[in-house]
Amino acid sequence: MSNVVSLDLPRKLPLAERQSVFLGNFCCNRRRRDDVFWLKENAELLNILASGGAIVPAEALAPYLRIYDGLDERLRFFPQYYRFLLSICLDLEDLGIRTDGTGTGLCDWAARMGLPEAELSDLQRAEARRLLARRGVTTDDPQLTERLHRFINRSETFALPNKKAVYELTHIVFYLSDYGVTDPGFDPAAITSLEFAGLLAYLDLDVDLLAEVCVAMRFAGKMPSPIWEDWVEQQMRGFVLSPRDPGGADAYHEYLVTSWWAAFADRPQFPGQPEAAGLTIQRRGGQKGPLRAMSEYMFHLGAARSADWSRMRQAVTDAVGHDGEAVLSEAEQSSDQFGAFFEGFARAD
Image 1 (cartoon, rainbow, N blue to C red):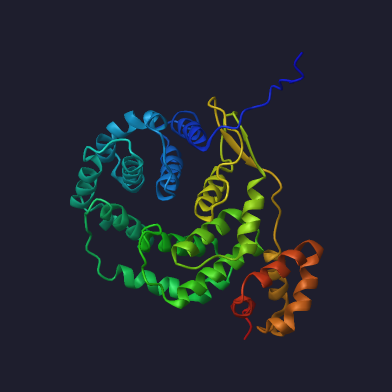
Image 2 (cartoon, rainbow, N blue to C red):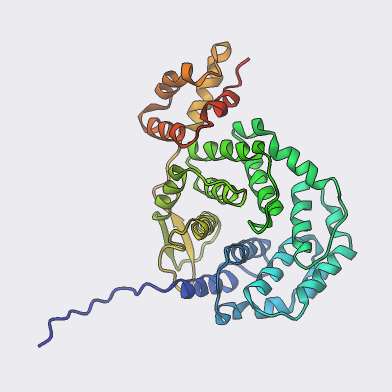
């Protein structure tokens, strides 16, 4: 008589199978394909897989074959979305969907139509340049790299709470390093900017932004603080997957970016058990960091503000309360640049 008890527990899918389920859901289940958010989500997912060196089985890419075959027509009718469409095309090709020259043809067409010239943002120009260069198409803007370096070298920008600026910093690092493939020769000031940005993200307990900063630091040749990366990994345990229709925004971006970071940090990726019937991603256990309380306290000090962290440490610690105290202490321990960061953050005359 056997004493083996069979339990009806879900089997943990291997990473490749989970990737297949994710791709199928993002391609077919979460949004309609004529929704611009479909473009955004799928461009982000495919870019994370391709730049993270994922090996995706051919059957996982099968839902995208029809999309891939229609990209030429879609690009010509929707040139305003050319960066999304080129990114999807090139990443699908790099992941192995097909190599028939479609990506090269689309890049050539985008350059001939002058689509990058319609951009007002240097960040978008940098993304367009990087996309076209992936298929050997060059763009003419000799001062672009200089302007990008000038922006990321201004470290004081990143000592102040400004998510948009940090987003632009990390993405400039992504584009200039070709997602970690090349060494763009960053100045020490750019590394300091990333350090300041990471401190802001950690003090705000913003896992999405901190994961991006940690990836950008690795692309820039600098190892992120273990305190930051251990916290990111801890937060990944709070993701919950369900087959319900998202019906709006969910935590998909946090989930993808932290799993992208995990690929470079040699940590477990894509936690949870997805179902082919649908995919909604929620995150439990998130909490607010002390960043806002710190900023409000410093503002109300007025002329009494000091940029000297050693003088302000106790008062700021008292101001953030018990919950914020541990995060503030860990932030200070996480970077030898904390004093310099606080000098800019204090905005003291």
